[in-house]
Length: 368
Image: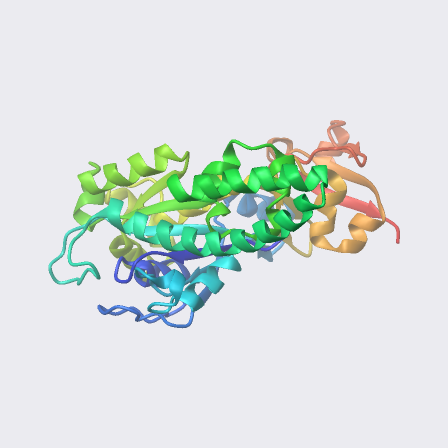
């Protein structure tokens, strides 16, 4: 399954700098609003040391990590929901993503222009949330109009749907993002407006972009505290990174990056934080296939059963699923080879109801 994350924020908050650093895609970054017009897209491998351990054990040269597609979307301004700036284009690009990485400026620098003249994370977040909610309200009104017509016929289900949609409209007018409303609703309720594909119903990860000095100091500034307060209020997550440091890391040879992080007093890069937290946010996990030809990571949702996991490789695997051979990663590493795992009686044959676990090493039997 592909994972597509849209990087959003006001102009000049560090989105393109971060994008360049973590994708090495060479997207343009400059100190003026609307530098990014067309969305830049980069594919980033998910760091997972388990892949390299499996590579050693099965004696293959080919390793294929799971990946995330990052989309650097044009900066948003007030009035975007009505087409101001690059609003219409920006909003269309967001609709095509699975989740949103909302970059928020949390540093002072007189040399970097802020589109609103000052650094204020609360205001900046509210600008983007407001524009997205306004666009979602336009979408909701169309849905409400159809529900009202159905309710007038006396259809009980249509009346229930109308009541829910009216509650949602009140929520959007006072509280804001649909995701907050959805969090308190049942799956059945959410299904009634799933076809609307609301922009503010997408999972959001706030990315507080601080100065290199602040990140190395390890103490969060008042700007980050403001971002955390807003995120906590809606149950969202926050990662704190320095786009400037990520740019430095990107220029280093891979083998030198861990040493650089250690010298800076950091345990992981901003990319690692984003990927790890993003996976948690979307309820994702990884399983592996490992053989002489390649070791490969596959991304699935937590709770997916074996046939669904097989279908990520090829739809025929899911359609003709028979059984799955499953080895626990820890058993593979502890015993050193698939043959030794088999000899120890730890290779398991699982059927259609098996819920795949993170790190499972799997081989599927199927017949089409």
